[in-house]
Image (cartoon, rainbow over all chains, first blue to last red):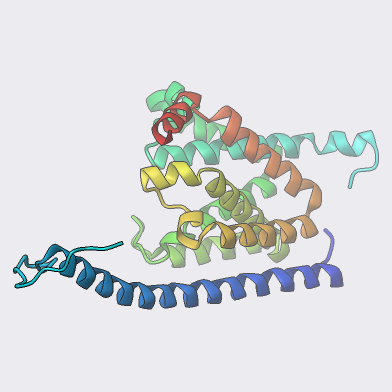
Length: 70
Length: 200
């Protein structure tokens, strides 16, 4: 059975570092994505409610609905 | 690495043991998951479990220590995702894994046990990468779904590299045998076609 050489330990260290770095980046990206998604979701819901002329959640009407323009 | 024909011939029992052990582990895994898409398992029917025991006995007769560490490693690796569940023995799965690991270390040595766990883990990761689409549709437990494809690939490279560094010949033989068993012997081609049809 061969013992691990210096090159082997270097490759193993690089791969472990890549895994840890990837995991940290993935976790950070997930948190940031959730934050941005929550903010954008609220804005999109309010925009939709404005163009529909009623609340997107409860359906309550608006006095002066605004026409949607692209 | 064997340098003469005699040395290669001396390894034939080990290769036979690896093939039989791989078949038994694959069929046992599908039996526990009640996977009806394994054509070998369906052909064996109800008495299949007897053939599993027979298969592992023959494998152990060919090369006991290798079969012991490979079977123990597959048991330990199989528990990685469910470490907290309580098993029929009454013990949690992490404790059973530790007991099996200690027995394997006493029987075959620390480096051999570590190599076996690494190679079985890399085979598990490769299998999960290959079954990623199917398991996503069927909502099966899969390392590639839990960790993501990129991290699974990095883990596979890491465990495969360590296995190759410790036991290059046996690692390659095990990997080829595992791929042959999972993709050629125990794969129901009809099911794969149905999945492709669903996706399109």
